[in-house]
Length: 89
Image 1: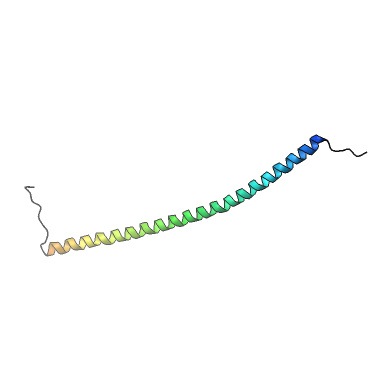
Image 2: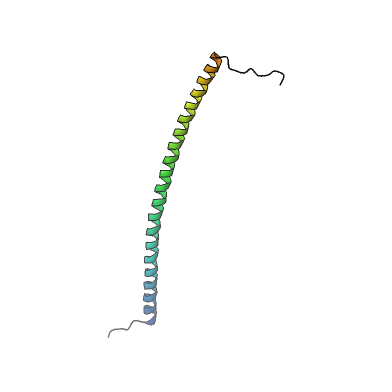
């Protein structure tokens, strides 16, 4: 004689089906979040690279400006254009 499933077994089975569908949705959401996070991390890496390149360029510009200052000081010295500071001030 085949036994009919009890109400408890049916209720448990329905509850498990709902839990499984919720887990499926959560897995999909996590998959989407992983994709979006990878994109954010890639963008941040590119920004770090760009910032590093700008810092290198700024260092090069500062080096050129330092050399310009040295050259200008030598020119001023040769042409006696340097102003002497006023000792009374």
